[in-house]
Image (cartoon, rainbow, N blue to C red; front, side, top):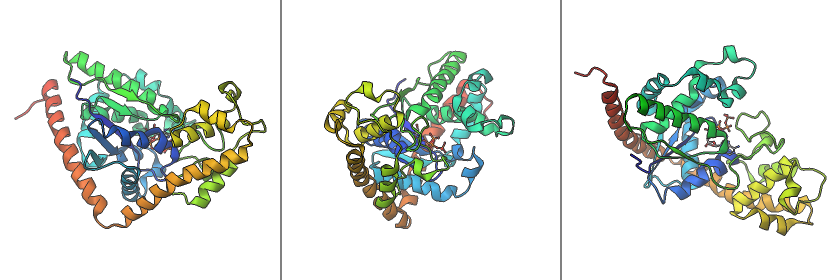
Length: 334
Ligand code: AQP
């Protein structure tokens, strides 16, 4: 049955960026006023990449601070750290038994992240999408707000849910719907408009971090790659200009404006003026978020108490659902 519940998460891998904010967190803030939401800090996912295994505790707190500073309200939404609710790993195993290897072989994120070293990549990186399906289905979630990059994983999650339901001839798992909204569902690197903005890009100039100072983000935006053509006056003039398109999308998403209005406002003006205005707009939002994050991280015990409360609430739902799932599978019970 569709319970209308929303589930999403971010990996505690440091350096949350504008892509995470515009592609995911910003949309969550609106959703929490309409639906019951669970926002997870997915640390089990973070350990699939060896460089991310350090500073997990600090990074988890930083993500929690980013959630709160961006406007997630712990009175309305459940906020917790994944590894504290054992149901995620338990369900991941069960679902892995309902996931043909051929489905996983199609996942492009594994191919991108494993690169040429596929044979040496950890099994966890390969089965990452099954854990993601478990995260969502553990709460029988109906909606999953994510950036465009997670669309394929969401489709797999739907296939896994259907496969389980079909096998046990019931409708236990709702088939979750992705919510991919806003003008910046895929924020691209500031240095290469064909690559997604990412925490793991070696160049810090490729992304705007939520903790960047005014100076840093100004330098990054002013240096962002564009081209020698004039500012576009229509969608047609953006074709084959991925860097320009990216900056305009960021502008639209930050100001909640329609693209045609932005194109009309800036057509005929030079990029310098547009970039100056973009610095101002991004800085207004990011400086408030980063100042609030700093305050929350310095406040002893506050984040721990929010996360503890979230863990208890998430566990209550997870334990009930795991019990039901085990009954459906008919595992032996005393
Ligand atoms: N560039 C992006 N544009 C729009 N949305 C994005 N998201 C990530 N990058 C972009 C969305 O943010 C949410 C959390 O992502 P994540 O941190 O859990 O994992 P990720 O997608 O792997 O992010 P990164 O930055 O690319 O991390 P690394 O470099 O470690 O792999 C998701 O909803 C995602 O769609």
